[in-house]
Image (cartoon, rainbow, N blue to C red; front, top):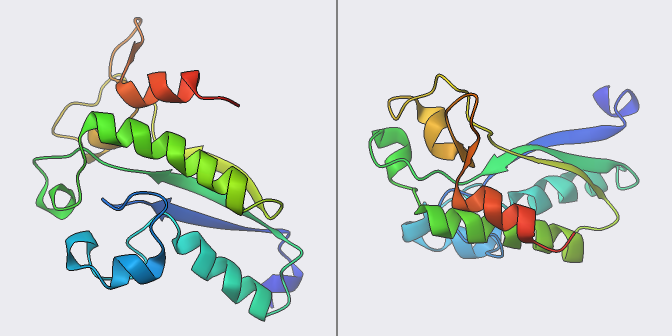
Length: 152
């Protein structure tokens, strides 16, 4: 059994277009947000309840990647895009939510992405990034600047 071998559960928590504070119940009941419990950042709480149900409540959860996309061109992602200012706001609010509501069981929270220098708008990952592609100059997007400025 994997539970006996694992010290932490790694999860993904894409926010889709839902604000980070929206519960899975709220998202599931709203077709504008995709109408499924997993279309939100707080899906992590559903996974945590499964851990607790099976005796793993003493272990931490690590969010291996999370974020919001601003992709207007790829049909698989464009339906849940947010603008760059909203993405910036949502990232800060997500970290605040986790600090205020998920302690002590939340561990690492890794957002996606610092852009690869070779990405273009044709790359799906480009739209999830908190920076613009480029080298050697670093060009932050609003999310990067908001995260840098937020209280730690």
